[in-house]
Amino acid sequence: MIPVPSSGELAIRAENDIVVARRAVRDAATQLGFGATDVTRLVTAASELARNVFKYAGRGVMRWNSMQAETRIGLELQFVDDGPGIADVNRAMEEGYSTGGGLGLGLPGARRLVDELAIHSAVGEGTTVTLKKWRRN
Amino acid sequence: MNHAAISVIKVKDTLMVTMPSDPDDSTIAALQERVLESMERHAAKGLILDISAVETLDSYFARTVTETAQMVLLMGGRTIIVGMRPAVAMTATQMGLKLNRIETALSVDRALEIVDTPPKPSGNHRQ
Image 1 (spheres, rainbow over the protein chains, first blue to last red):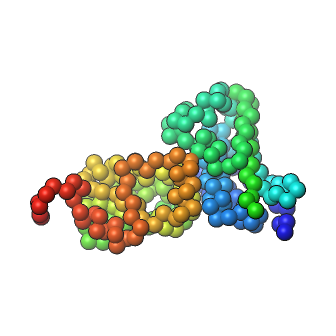
Image 2 (cartoon, rainbow over the protein chains, first blue to last red):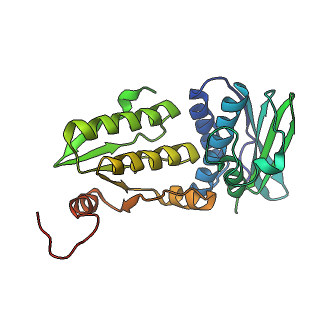
Image 3 (cartoon, rainbow over the protein chains, first blue to last red):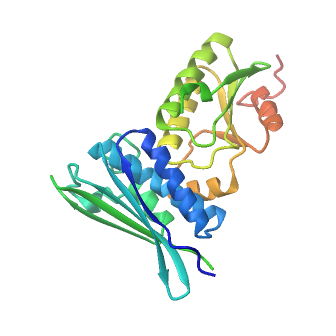
């Protein structure tokens, strides 16, 4: 059975929007039939990326879209900001590397929780992080 | 969400904190402050942090809990985390989150027993 397509957009402008983003992803993933652990993985990854938007850019947008390929169902999340951008994307993906005083686990940790994570960033222009996760049938 | 969502109660000589299911960053930061104040005020032996309601443990939460445990240790107490959900444990491990030096227990009863046990067993020393 294929669930109802789901999509939406949420502005990230305040610290509390990280919580709002987590709830939106939890609802979308649950609605698409993801299992409890995969819902937690998606919500946790979204929490890291929403916090990055708020912390580094101050504001941005989270978009979510259900995906369908043949019989597969998935969820795509996109985090878009026009903040300072990431000078060295490869280093940002390294565990323990942080310019923000954190543990440097956010991006590499989030990548391990999903099937795909792609970063497009240009210094002075902003950052877009897209992640995808497929439901295990 | 406001800081009132976190309550610190004292059971015997131990502080017990129950985390709400989806705390925002400032609630998590407030946890650290409230715990350290209470440690001093009650001369507590340790901290039991009940996270059985917590649905998301991300790197910020993990870092704050680890830091708090280190501060509690400096004040002479132990920190024990209780009730981590299976999905949360799997996600945290997969992400590589390290809860260094923090002890865990399956139940509050067991955590209370651990707090009562001296950190380094040294023969037949008794209080």
